[in-house]
Length: 329
Ligand SMILES: NC(=O)c1ccc[n+]([C@@H]2O[C@H](COP(=O)([O-])OP(=O)(O)OC[C@H]3O[C@@H](n4cnc5c(N)ncnc54)[C@H](O)[C@@H]3O)[C@@H](O)[C@H]2O)c1
Image (cartoon, rainbow, N blue to C red; front, side, top):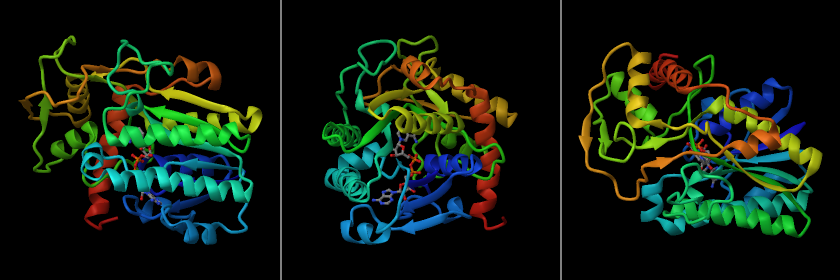
């Protein structure tokens, strides 16, 4: 098959691109490299274009035929989304509208879309199922909700099949440690703990240890990026087979506390990691854990990697990332 991967130079998109290539598919990455990395698409065709620019986008993709589109390209910093809402709507929502316009003009019908658990907002149930109310509490989550709605509305017109995959916290790295998570700024827990463990002078603060959880720290659902990759392949196959519009949670369904993550990192690193306890952050629920049973039913998918596997691979990648950053590899 021939696939277009938007945002394929980014963290998750580059792992899925690699998986697709390993399966023998032809991959074309479309990315403006605003947060992605050129090295992450080595060996793949890269179309460098900004999704917000409809005419250059149309020109870049004119006459191209794809069996499906994996749409990862988006801005995803919650804090930045509060400061720059217009930019987030333009990049995420208008960018998606442009992509879909070109897809329809070109006759590409199947789209697997990166959605997020942020569409749910504060959970009202211990496990969050796809039927949970959609009440995002930040601009980033709102844009993703609107992007889902856009895909659903176009699907209603009979022009597009889509699978919106609502990831919880993606983490971990490729088995050969040559690709992994590298955002600047990095806002995610595991890479930040490991950067500190590797010697970066970044403060490590646990925001609140008085939540109603077994050890008092927040519980989140971490999912290995390689498990995500398998689910994406399954979702695209589902669209090829049955079409339709689907929303599916992708998470481990168990949840780990911040303290458990820290302990797993210490285990991976082989030494203690110092941290401070800070005040709770506004808008941080005690627990955000997926009910991922629908993805299991529909895709026959179950995550195969646990927290220690996630952290071990992320630590191995962190060594390589530092070599890359220093220009030694
Ligand atoms: N990382 C997570 O834990 C997580 C969780 C839930 C959802 N998601 C979603 O998954 C997707 C990928 O996340 P990630 O962590 O790999 O992010 P990332 O920033 O590493 O990758 C996003 C990629 O999209 C590209 N991009 C952004 N705007 C673009 C535009 N206008 N035109 C062309 N390219 C553009 C960037 O250059 C980058 O390569 C995002 O849509 C994100 O919202 C991520």
